[in-house]
Structure formats: C-alpha cells, structure tokens
Image 1 (cartoon, rainbow, N blue to C red):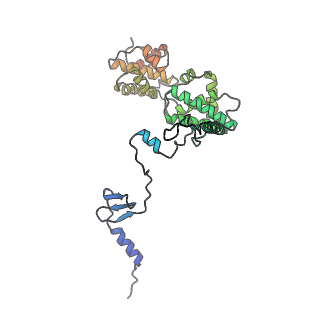
Image 2: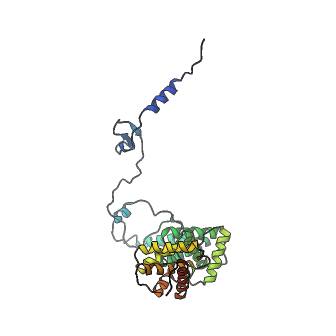
Image 3: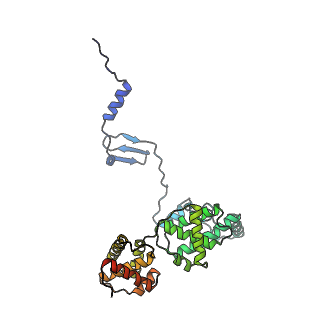
Length: 315
C-alpha cells in the first residue's frame, strides 16, 4: 500500500534553512562609511549595501560655522507669510568673503528692492504678511512656545482660505487664533491677558474666537485649572513641591464638584495660596492674584470654597 508523502521544493527547503540561521544581533552591526555598508562584526555578513550617507561633507564646530557652510535655507514654517520658501538679500555692503562692495553696490540695492516687491504681490500675501508680523509680536510678548505659534498660523491660514477674515480686522482674528491655539495645546493664556496686548476689545476677540470654532469645526476641551499652577508657582518662586500639592488640592475639589463654572486661573491661584500655607511659604493673596491675572477678591472667594471642601479653617 502506497501513501502520498508531501515533498518540499528546493526553494522551500532553502528558505527553511535560511530561517534557521541565527540572526546577527543588533549590537554587532556596524556601519562601514568607506563602502556604504552595514556589516556584522561576528560573521562578516553584509546586512545592507549601497547606503546613501545623507550627512554633509563638511564639519562645523560652532553655530556660526554651521550657518555659514550650510547650503540650505531655514525650515518650512507656517509662521512666515511665504512659508519660508523665498530668499532675502541682506542689508550689507560686503560680499561673502567680507570684502567691501564698490562697483556692484548699486546693483545689489536694486536687486534687494525688487526682491522685496516680488515677495508680496497679491492681496492675500499682503494680508498674511501683516498677520504674521502681528503673530510674531504677540507670541513674543506672551512668551508662547514655537509649536503654539505654528498652530496659530495654521488656524489663521485656514481662516483666510475660508474667507473668514474678510470684513474683520486682522488683529482680532490673529488674537482669536492665538487664544484657540493656546486652548488646543493646553498652554495657560487667558483671553484677558491676550486682550491687554492688543488694541482690540475683548468682545471682538471673543466673537472671532467663536466664529473660528464654528466655521473651522475645531473642538477644544474646557481649561483645566491645573494647567495654570506651574506658571503661578514659577512666578512666585515657590519650590516644586508646591506644584504637586496645588494639583492635588484641585483634583480633590473636582471630585466634590466645586470647580464647575469657576475661573480656572482663580481656582489655580487659590490652590497655590493654600499649598504655600501648608509649606510655610509666606505669600500674600495680592502677590498671587497679580501673577495669576485675577483679583484678590477672586482668590479669597475661591480659597473659602476650597477650605470648606478640604475641611481647612479659614482665617
């Protein structure tokens, strides 16, 4: 009686033998820059060949040397009206070697003038150029991180594409975009704080903020009072333990439902005041209110509510 036994093809047998071979450990693989290959130190096997070296062929030991020898421009960024693609001619009377320009000086002035004109041609480019200058100013005075600035620029560009800026002031829309970006990125900046550095009223900025939320369909969560705590603690010069203690106080207040409908900056200021008392740090309500951007009455009222929840006797 004959039975059919499965037979393997030579290709299957060879693949099975290759799978049984031990793989070279990662710590034994080195890069051979002369041949562009990754080689195993134990077996000498070439893991990968013809690898392209993307590093520059020059070396630089200082930021000045790196900037002078690099042949590429700055990174693409939404915070510049032309996305950083266009070049600019520097206002100098010397060439790359440091020699003073004499014959080519008037030609360079003419090139610089036409370069500046060609960077801004349409009304949209003029709008973006003015808006990005205002964004730079506000981001500087508000001490915003670069990623918040990039997000605000992206929001404003989308508003321009949707035609939301037409008929409205550039300052109000860019201020609303900054406030929206801060809410998205969990960076504690209040609307009143942004309003203090603009010529636009709070109502107009709030109106533009609601317009951006509705038309761009952006969803933001409610502001957490704990986001304001590190900034207030740092401004008062308190130890890092105060941050942890103040956040614990805020979390306890959340469990008891005290934080609903309250100003997050005021709650954070009251929590920091209570944490400073527990740590023996002498800070007045006036100092904390000034750093938090709220009134002393707000700090006092929020402190009473937190003291009632935590069972602390209010003096």
